[in-house]
Length: 79
Image (cartoon, rainbow, N blue to C red):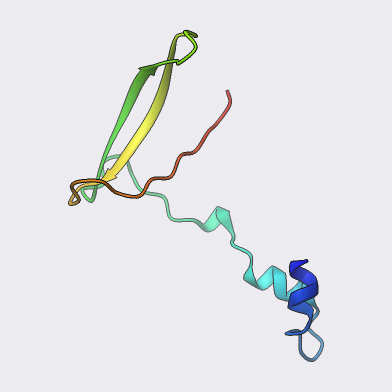
């Protein structure tokens, strides 16, 4: 559906697929922040599994200069 909608913006020799390649993010170039960066508070936490299957380990990162409730991103990774 995206490519169909993008096709109307394709001009000249540029196809909708070429336009999509220009717009999509390159995750390999994403900024990475060190665990020791002073602008964040980072820690590993553990909490009990809700179904009694041991403990779950998580990596919690928060802005150092913010207090109170903040937006969150949860990333789930199966090992």
